[in-house]
Length: 321
Length: 258
Image (tube, rainbow over all chains, first blue to last red; front, side):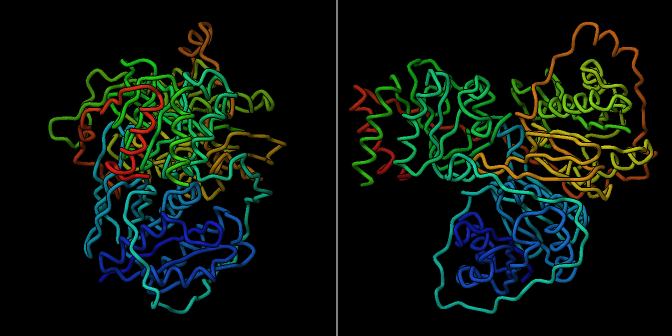
């Protein structure tokens, strides 16, 4: 058995599903799991971590660890890795993890990859497959020259086990080293949307030029609300200023891989297709039967989104209650 | 003060990727190489900062096969950068080795005010270089920046996080900033800019002279695959109402995703 460290993040005091995927994968591979978690409610989250397979659990609710600061987090984790020497570190691909772990890898001179979509853990090795060129191809990552490797996985790629409600353990406080920070996080400004980020969303409803104007995104939002989905957009409509760039899906926006992607009025430029073709099921709604999006779609509807989308909202409301 | 911009040359977003015969790389024939789109925002922001601090010099730096990479450096010079540095080195190194090579080169060049780069390169998308460069230079970093304000060497930046939320971060230079879309609107090089760029200094650094081994890379990309062929699309017939009813049933009973 070898040691795997799993970096856990919380959402409303519960462990994010991306982190649960990693606990499950490590447990299924028979790893000795050390879980770490920082910030408010990180102590209380221990019981959930133990139920999903953690053998040890470390937390910090210290003020310096309550808001993400790259310097404080990277130094604390780097020191922890030196003390505990895991062979593998796993984190789910949030904005925080993607910022933090490259710096940790540089501090400890370990291997690093992000955006993993396949993960195979054995005692002697870890194999990761990840998309390249925004999903136009994929490659396997071979790790070498390092006793420890860090893998950041995309959310929604791995199954989550059922919790073992009898499992428990002791939450231990992590040692936060002394430090003189040069980075100050002054504030965090909430976004307009409280929904999951595109990169973490399980369902995405996305709009393109066919939506015709900014105000019409309301139709997509109603469908998204019914499904618990996040709204995305094509580059054309972001560049036109209809919606913010944070909503852009594609090679120069966000690369997404939800379970369900509903493309409304998106023709399917190659750079958009690259960013979403990893989605498990793709629905395309477009007036143009020859639009390239249909080549990537699982289900296609040739029709006007202004007719089809409200009908869909109605159907899903009836189905999901 | 030197304002550094680290750029990478990448295949154009319109490129159709093909694999090499051993499947351990992509086939480089017919690829149109461009300046990584996110690095354009980095160049533009460096030029904006130079306007506010005219005594500074914008040095644009890239690592890769010189014969090819210089084209993208010339693009950055044509946009307005003052000098270019190319580290003539192999492509098969990982971000950890690249960051060390660039850190060493920047240390040799000296007078580091601030370093800009793109939030990720659209080829491998590792988005690790900025943070690792900052670590090797022992300076702070902020990634995915969409707003940048300077007051002397005090920088206040906005970092984009989940769901349109932003972190407001304050740093003292020198530091590394990785640029997101939205930071600015890059201006395409003008004809006079392109002419001037041809005469601007382009310095060459031999990768081997830096004392860093390409073989120290800790990750290697191999066994490339093209995405699995999708089964043909199932087109739904009827009017909007019939299509919506059928789709809902298919998503629940066939695809089982609802």
